[in-house]
Length: 278
Ligand code: SAM
Image (cartoon, rainbow, N blue to C red; front, side, top):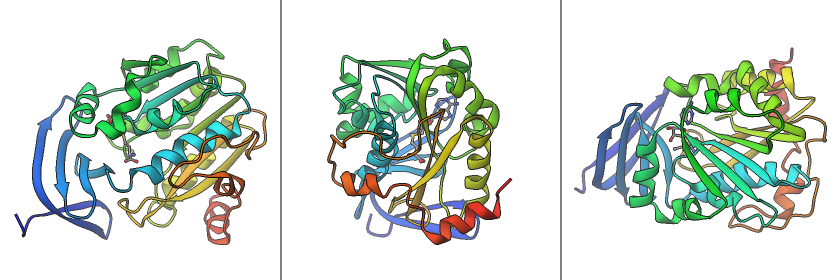
């Protein structure tokens, strides 16, 4: 066991290796290879198709940012849709908001939700909230067919752009989201590393600008993801992309000062975005 390592090789020219103590679960689902391992440094870790999705130790950085940033750009978020996010971490953060009346959680792969319930109870805890309805479906089809104006906030907590997640990064899909949002609706998508996947970030930023009047990129830590620094691209139909209400949630990472500065883009990120300006 001492010599067992998991190595992620999803990013060109970059490997991430984590010492593991146990392989708890392996399964070929209809959509992906699902693995749960126990590690020395990160606790339990969920891996899909060879890519680290979340770990017990550092998941809060990612889930607090992807949920609470858009939930504070919207002044009154009541109806929320989470696409992907089968581990449950994003829904757990969304249901901390007392204003929320309903959460549609649309995950394509029910096996991820089952694995999260079994191995990651601290992440999946929010799925039992009575305001949450779990829908096992393709998020693209679901949003395409959703009634116009049915959500205040849509959060896209997707895997990397491979397989069924490819379309979740497209301008076409952001257009469906625009239609499914209310007039002051807000969208937030995880858009990967600003250092190692900058072309993807630029693509998402441009794709979102096709439909949303205001678009901003928030940065946060994600220690177990390539580069340790992650982006969340937020689009708004009419409101400025900024803190638009008092911060009510203090997490282990997220707090008022983080929200105040969320869109205060550092110079390097301005350069990345300017390089792809259309
Ligand atoms: N935080 C993670 C990351 O950045 O890598 C993402 C975690 S979450 C486990 C990603 C989920 O998106 C997976 O469970 C996957 O099944 C789901 N997913 C991928 N494509 C989807 C689609 N088209 N519709 C709904 N869910 C999708």
